[in-house]
Length: 462
Image 1 (cartoon, rainbow, N blue to C red):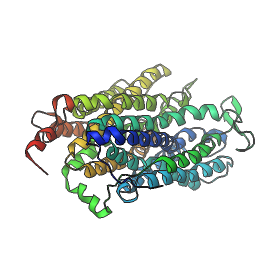
Image 2 (image 1 turned 90 degrees about the horizontal axis):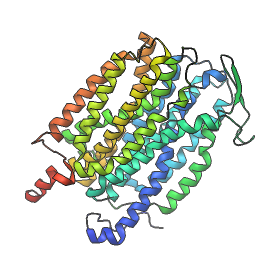
Image 3 (image 1 turned 135 degrees about the vertical axis):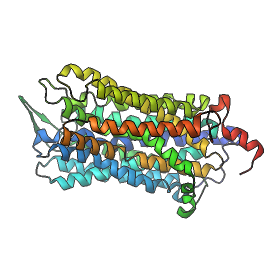
Image 4 (image 1 turned 60 degrees about the vertical axis):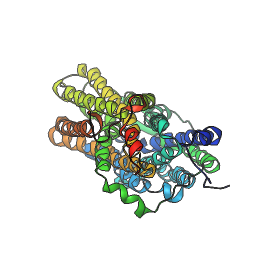
């Protein structure tokens, strides 16, 4: 089977209708399915760490936050590499290998949780390797942006990234259920004894990782058989031209605001519930609530792709920034980060879900916005998608680590949220000045009203 397609012209209406659309949508759905399990395996550690102290592992609060943060460190670093792989090796090879390589941390995690004497450094290594599930996102997005015409960029990227983001909720939703019984008999190992206050029961924590193994094997086979690669090739050196543009860095800042917040809060949310509200009588189980945030953020990312195409990404990115600022202020001044009782818990969860909602809106709008900002060069636009996704993937590391430091040193996450508000203000001002206001350098008002590129291409050939 040929890896590289001989011809690809998505902007050619005849080509798109006769053969392009069929291939593009097939690649989109198969790669989106695999992306779900990239995100799921990326965040499996965040669902596991809250159970470790109750089955015999002697890790302190900061050690647990470091485990939750480590996949973010790896994910961001590996995304920098993935941002340049598609034009070199092609979609088929990169995605297939990315799926199969995630078997390593899943198998290792199964064996690690079965032995309560497993040293902390091994869990750090496993958590870092789980970051491979976050790293390959920067191959998925550039690939999809090349397969689709500009008028469908918001829709296609919103579908893939949004449905892919469901993997975060998937791992946090399935984990509490699947570890509660011997889902795989003796194949996955024996039970551990869970002890929390007066509660003593058997759990199978290894199931949290074990159930991904057969899915990853089959998904990798599907990717190898059905995916193809677009003949847009460039060396690593040629691709570094994106760093000469100031807009690469502005787009990076706005995407850290949106996806950095989504992924960061997804990693830290369970531990925040445990540390902020876990000391009260009848404290809530973090994993019963943690999956709602990523679920809402993922769903709204899917929904907002088409509106971003219609009315432009800039306006929705601005809404995202303002909403994140408002939600963070509410957490601080509403006393939800330093509660005196469990009565504050419903309000805390509601505001956190609002933050996930706003970040999801921005995740959709920015990925419509960036290809328009770099519309004069689709290859550069794809590269910027990969690069911005790489830096924003440090969100789980940065957010979990800084929230952990704030709680450990001050007893509260308030200092973290004060700092993040300042960052949101800066990012929102950048978006307004360069991409939204009247006369902005590269505005994106959508297909309804037009973009800077619609005017520029009439009089200028870049």
